[in-house]
Image (cartoon, rainbow, N blue to C red; front, side, top):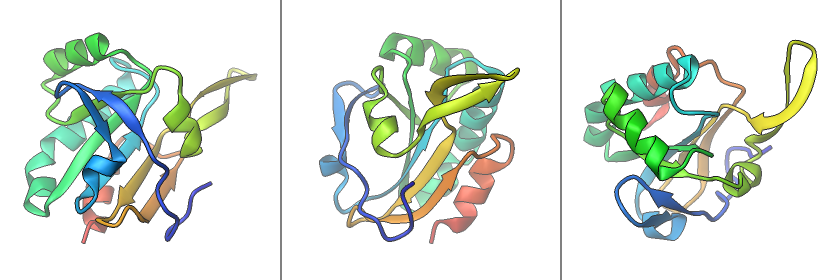
Length: 151
């Protein structure tokens, strides 16, 4: 797992803003990168809505927020439309970035083990260093907790 003080792994992903966004593009910018399993599921929708409701407060602190899932950009756009999501979503269809952040691995449901995205969030500073790392988070109330940790 990544820890506070680690350099954030490099990423370059398709964005709902059009084109790609990479961690190199974000040098000099503080940002939140949160990983979630799937658009339009209850927990993921709750988390996206809560981050969206707080987007002005994040922006007032000059912090950008990005949600990452394996869903396609087309699915992300439907998700944004259906739930008035106001954050930028990134598509990681092969889970390469999720794996680099240790946000992809074994999960358990109904006694079965399978591979999937582990709900995780990272606050990354202007130098690309992890300031906070949260693994196995609960969706409800998480965005507010993250906002409270952004300095």
